[in-house]
Image (tube, rainbow, N blue to C red):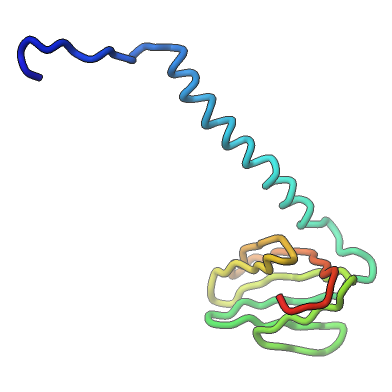
Length: 129
């Protein structure tokens, strides 16, 4: 600072400003967290709905495997679900961490080797997603 120039106004110790700088970001985070947590609990049911289609989703390094145990069918990279019927997806990983997500059906879950995750989806209309 050159001689003769006064220091700019200091905000150190300005209690009201410090409280606002702390509370405002906390409120923004709370506003984001509440709907996020609601969606997580809504898409992570305790038990599969009655009559739902069971699908085991296996994440591999470069591809997805979809097993339909009740139908004795296995597909690669293509998930086939009937419209209007809930599907209970069991997510497991073999050798890589992935995120399973079909944006039009909602819900996103991480697939981690050694850990089983679940998600329930219900496609309402026929289509390719």
